[in-house]
Length: 351
Image (cartoon, rainbow, N blue to C red; front, side, top):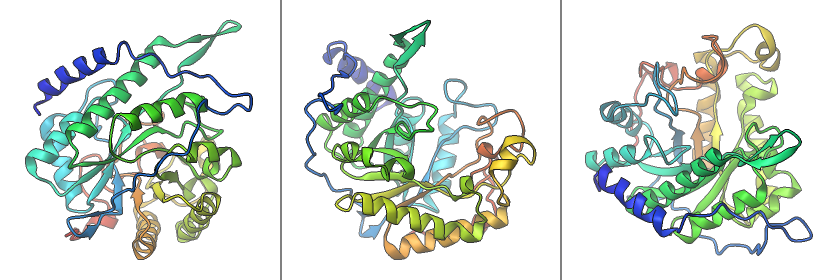
C-alpha cells in the first residue's frame, strides 16, 4: 500500500474509532485493571522460511542532525540501513509506529528483504501535575492514540512482516522517566490485541518483571520482553553474560508459563569519563569490550534458542546530553556513518 493510501486509511480508521476515547483507568477495589482476564496466548513465530530468527537487533534510524519529532531519515537512508541490517540479522525491533515506521515496512516489502519486525507503539504518561491538581495532557493522549492506531493499521497491512507488537517501553519499572499507570497500559494493550491477530506484549526492565506486581501485566500479554543491561550495574564486559543469564533466569522463574524474550542487551563503546556517568558506569566502554560482551551473549542465546535483541544497530547522536562521549549515543554495532565497529568488521552470513 503506498504511503498516501495508508495515511488515508488511518484517517478513516481514526474516524471509525469514534474519537477513540482514552483508555479508562477504572480499578477494582484491589487496584487491578477492570475486567482483567488472562489472554489466550498467541504464539510468537520465531521460525521463518525454515530458519530460527531469534538473533535480532533494535533499530532506530536517526543520523547526525536527525531526531524523533524533528528531521527524519529519507527513504534512501532507510533502504541503506535495512540492507545493512538484513546482512546480519533476520529480525528487528522498533520503538514506535509513527514517523519512519510505515516507510520502513514499505521498503522491506519493495526490496523483498529477509527481515521480520516487532513493531513498537510508544506510550507516554497522559496525566500531569498542574499546581496542586492532576490534569490530562492532551498532546500526550493524542500521541498515544496515534501510536496505537498506526500500530494496528501497519500490523494488519504488513501481515507478512510484522510478527508482534510491543505496546510501551519501560513504562512500569520504578525508575522509568515515562512511567504510565498500569490500567492505562493494559487498556492500550487490549485495544491493540482486539484489532490485530499478532502476539501483543510490552517491554520492560527485568527489575519490573521480577517484581510480584508484574503478574497482572504478564496476564495481559502473549509473551514477555525484558531488558537486561549489565553496563548499568558496574560490571566489566567479561562478566556481562553471567549477569544476563542470571537475570533472564529470574524473569523466567517469576513467569514460568511465559515465553521470555530479551528485548535489549548489549555494550556501549564510549562514555563520559567525568561526572555522574563516570561514577555509575565503572566498566570499560570501547569496541573491544563490546565485542567480548556481545559475542558471548549472542552465542549463549543462540545455543539456548532465546530470542535476543542486541541494543542497537546504529549509534544515535541525538540521545542524551550534549557531551560527544555521552554513553546513550554509542550503543550501536555500527557507527553513525554506518561503518561497522570491531564486532561486525567481518560480515556474517544470516542465511
